[in-house]
Length: 337
Ligand SMILES: Cc1cc2nc3c(=O)[nH]c(=O)nc-3n(C[C@H](O)[C@H](O)[C@H](O)COP(=O)(O)OP(=O)(O)OC[C@H]3O[C@@H](n4cnc5c(N)ncnc54)[C@H](O)[C@@H]3O)c2cc1C
Image (cartoon, rainbow, N blue to C red; front, side, top):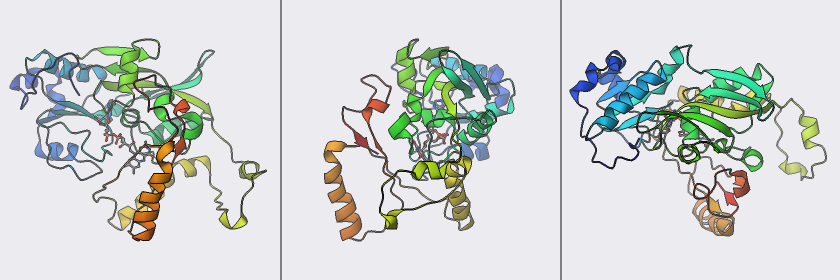
C-alpha cells in the first residue's frame, strides 16, 4: 500500500524498532510464516519475500503498523493479504510487512457478518474485510437474504474482491461487487481509520473499491442484500425461446450454483492440478471491438490454429451497471469481460 501523501523512496527493509511496538507479539519473522504468506494462487511471481508477517487481532494492530511506517522518513511496504488468490503477486510486500487479514477472524469482537435493515438502504450486511464470501453467503442465508453480485468462486475475501471488481454472471443486472457497497471502514496509508461512502470521503471510497489494495485496507464493508432466490427453474425457462439442441439444464440449489467451482477445485486437488501456475488473463473488451476480438482470438487462435485452451468466461455488461463516477469507471462503451 502506498503511504498517501508521502512520496518517498521505499525502505529496503523494516527498522528493528518495529519489534518494540505493542504489536510485536503479533509479528513473525519465522521463515515458514514468511514463505507461506508470500505465496499466491498464480504461482507466477515468486520469491518476493516480506521481512515480517503481522497477524492482527483487531483493526488497531493494523493502525499501529501503518502509522509506524508512515512516521518514518523512509516507509516500508505494507500489503493486506486476504485469501492469497491473486494471480501476479498483488498481495506481496518485498522486504515489508504482510498483514494476514484472516487472523482478524479469530476475534469475535470484530465485525464478522452482521445483517441489518433500515428504511433508506433496505437489507444490508456489515462484513469484515477478512471474511470469505462463502461465509457471507451462509450467514445471510440464515435470514433468507444474500448479496446480489458474486464471483464465480467463493473462497475469496470481501477485501480481496472489492479491491479488484468482483465479477460474475450477475454483472449484467447488478453490476460488479464494487457497485453494491454502501459504505466502508478503511485504514488509510497514514494509519487513520476512516468511514467512507459515495457521499462521505467519496474519493477514498471510490479509490479503494477496485484500487488493488493501494489506497487503504478495508476493515468493514456494508454490502447490499436482497431476498435469496428460491428454486424456480420452471418459472425461469417459461416463455424463453431456444433451439432444443442448445438447451443445457441442471437443477441445483442456490448455494450449489454459487459454490459450483468448489467441486471442480476438490477434483483438481485430488489430481494434483490445483496447486500449479495459473497464467490467467482478465480483459475488458469494448463492444466496438468484440467482433475483431472474436475473429482474432476465438476464430484464428483457438479454432483455426487449434490451440489447446482452458475455460474462457465471457460476461457481457454495460457501463451503466458501474456506480463509480469518472475517472473510476470503464470508458464509455458496453463491455465484454
Ligand atoms: C479460482 C479463482 C476464481 C476466481 N473467480 C473470480 C471471479 O469469478 N470474479 C472475479 O472478479 N474475480 C475472480 N477471481 C479473482 C479474485 O477475485 C481476486 O484474485 C481477489 O483479489 C482474490 O481475493 P483474495 O481474498 O484471495 O485476495 P488476495 O489475493 O489476498 O489480495 C488481492 C489484492 O487485494 C488486496 N487486499 C486483500 N485484502 C484487502 C483488504 N481487506 N483491504 C484492502 N486490500 C486488500 C491485496 O493487497 C491485493 O492487492 C478468482 C480467483 C481465483 C483464484
